[in-house]
Amino acid sequence: TMTILGLAIAEQQALLTTPLTTFNYLNDPFPHTASLILTLGLIYTTTKQSHRNLFKLQQSDYALQIATTQLQQETDRREEAQQALATNQHRLQTLLQDTPLIIWSLNNKGVFTYLQGAQLFSSLIGQSIFEHFNTQIPNLQNLFTLALHGELRQYTVEVNSKTFECWFAPLTHENEQVIGLIGTATDISGRQQLEEILRQSQKLESLGVLAGGIAHDFNNLLVALLGQTALAAAKLPPNNPARTHIEKANQAAERAADLTRQLLAYSGKGQFIMKPLNLNALIEENLHLFEVAIPNNVSLHHHFAKNLPLIEADTGQMQQVIMNLLLNAAEAIGEQPGIITVVTSTRVVTEVEHKYRYHTGTPLLPGRYVVLEVHDTGHGMDELVQKRIFDPFFTTKATGRGLGLAAVMGIVRGHKGGVQVYSEKGKGTSFKLLFPIAETEESVAETAVFFPPLSHPSTNFVLIIDDDDIVLEAIADILQTANINYFTANNGHTALELFRQHSHQISLVLLDLALPGMSSEEIFHALRQEKPTISIILSSGYNEVEATRRFVGKGLAGFLQKPYELTQLLEVVRTYLESNH
Image (cartoon, rainbow, N blue to C red; front, side, top):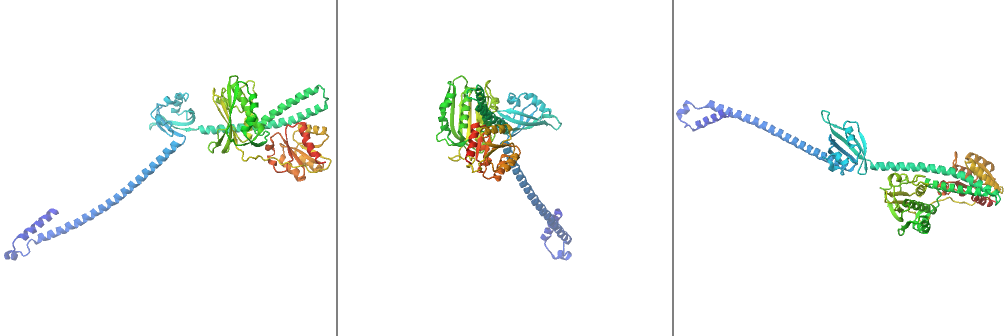
């Protein structure tokens, strides 16, 4: 088209350059008309085609703009996705690094091909598991072979003093060929420690309940034994040979009573008289006694913290704790020269550490504590012995009796404290006892309120309530010998029935703490409801603070600690009866 148009234009240009004469005009007034028309047609066609091409070009440009916009949007979306992926990868990387979970893979030669989640082991990639863990993991080659065959899926290992729980599976290729192992390892050391603390707490609780129950029954028997031997001795003339045997029986009963006190101390329910106490002063006052108690080959040193805060404690129980620790340390040193060092200090137990590390089972509350440390230069203990040193009657000595440290444990528990033990074979042992600092200078322990007995009729009776018939019989014999009137009941319902019938005669009630059926607290309230002025004395083998906790401020007349002697019982009873004449 362009060629024809060019020829037409050239022809027109030639025409225009030809001179116009009369002859030429007359013969052909419109020369090349057809050619001109053809040229104009071609111009029109060409212009129209150009417009069409231009429109197509504009359409292509618009489509290109749309495609460019879509491409830019897709690029933006990809960048956002890549940024989100990078963020997620960073989060995952951080999570894997900060959690105890380790993800790993090994080839079929045992070489680490991937390791994530433990900076301690990150340098092991490309190295063999056998080179680094063959000595720490017994039978490692056999375990690896079993795992490759899918015969072992889980195993617990000890590495670098930590415990790891491992889960793994064979890693296969597309053709199902095993090319290695993939798995995880979780550091369960902390969980195991908490589980051990829970087991220890449960063991202490069960042993404490057992010890407390045995001590309670023992005390009831001792009340009867001491009462009956006292009555027998009273009926014998001074020069009777049988008195010697009775005195020996009394001595044996006293030793049994001491044993029950230790059992109650272990259970945390021993007889405690709580008051503000300065440990420095207590140790200094008893220093000579402590030095005499240990052998001559052992030197006793002490270092006291200045301005040591007071603790809320029982003085006698604290003396027993220190003495037991010193005797235990002296036994650990043996016959060789050695040193025992007693140190006092303070410590703040934080929120992080209060849940573990203490042998008493019950977590310590965060706060300030006074620390009593007894360190010896003896033989030390291995881990197996350390796990059992607080068990009742456990001992490493052929002739030992094994209640010393058990009693220490119970006393510390009763004082809401904690015990830490540091020992290494051949390097000695340190016991650290933590006691909460007293809240005030005065005793914060609330005890029973004692009300003076009120007036009663002259025919006064004592109502004895105890579930043990042996105890009832012994007390009855003692009161009868002293010409004191009494009623006995071995349960709450019988006691209330007797009281309703004879309330005008009964001026004193001796109530045992542990009773079947109706509790002592229920009986107490029922008796006071029948007769608000009745004097009630509580009796128990448990310590006074523990036993009277539910009776504080309710008018309890007094407390009688089992096992008691004849003279103690008569003194208490006569005090109330004589005041009512």
